[in-house]
Image (cartoon, rainbow, N blue to C red; front, side, top):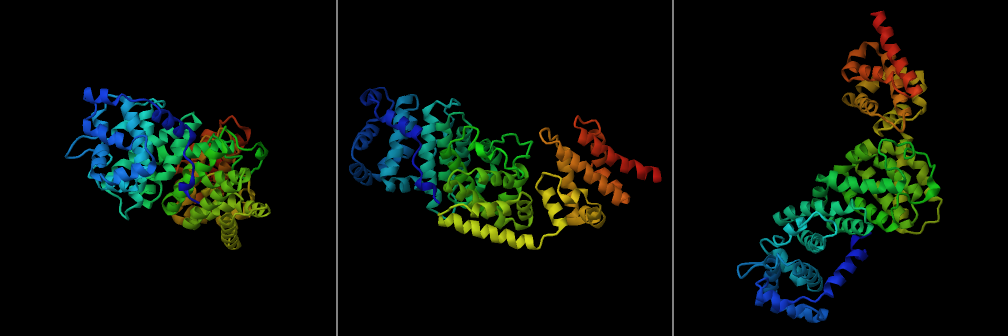
Length: 479
């Protein structure tokens, strides 16, 4: 799987072709002082000529063309000189992208320049208008040049460290645009940049603006943009026959999945937080049911493999809770031919099978809590389970499970009130089995919260919260 094999977005190609076809009054620009004679000579020598001739011309004057684009001791960049002429700036941005594509030696020489991105980075902020071609064309040029830079050296340079966050910011605004053409450019640009571990780490550092919009696209594709409800994503296959929802095209879906697959190579860094913030295992399990093509299934499985391999202790229990083993078994029954897909499917199935062999009822309950979502699974209603495990639930891993339960019960769950009812049930059982630990539970805010829920509009929540409060009152009177 490679990001390099993707075709350039049609929207971008069409824009570039239109700009290439525009006549530019170059001599008038020289007379007006917008560009220099030297700029014009260099532009004319490589403009509207065959690729081979262009490459030979550039190779014969590498320093001159570096100065043309990036500036230097012998003169300003043509972009800085022509800053007030948007038609020239647009033309140069398209030409610059063509030049580094046709003459790789120019890319290498530009990267060696002390400040190769200086004339370009301000143009990303040229305007906030999504229709303005200047930031768009700038991002295309910079994406290609920065991608070459980060993959040509084992160490990230200060210039790359400065450019990547700005590029991520701009490209992420495109991923949130309502125009699918602009979304496509943004997502493909991100994919082009995520070639190294450091680039992925910087991308993750901006996850609120970079990752969150991509997950929203996947939620739209899954037919569940409302993050407050996980009813469908937690295991139900209702609605699977509707296909890809939310107006998300197959190409955009594939490219978003590709970006998150690239990011998943930092699985140890991102896995737990992706699950905590986005219930990524529930989402990916649901998308696997919907996946319309082998290529999307392949990316879904490859990403799950990375995330689960890096985070076995925390994510394997959640994978079992969301019924991933059964889903993988179903997928195995499909007629699949892709060797990478089949290898990942086998690896995941074996890893989960090995884990489930050692799983206890307590592990199942802990996994359900860690998933961030509750359903009426057997432990909740089983008095024996609570007698045997209540103390372990409170003490295991420095009290991590009651903290997770508190996190769950604190949410509103407007679209899935059942979760609140189950959480109240669990709190009541903990108080009943360990009345001497009431103080610990009160410090976590459980008593206040279940009393609040006695006034909830949902009948089952009111009933379960009343029962939980009843346990507290019973032991208060006993005292």
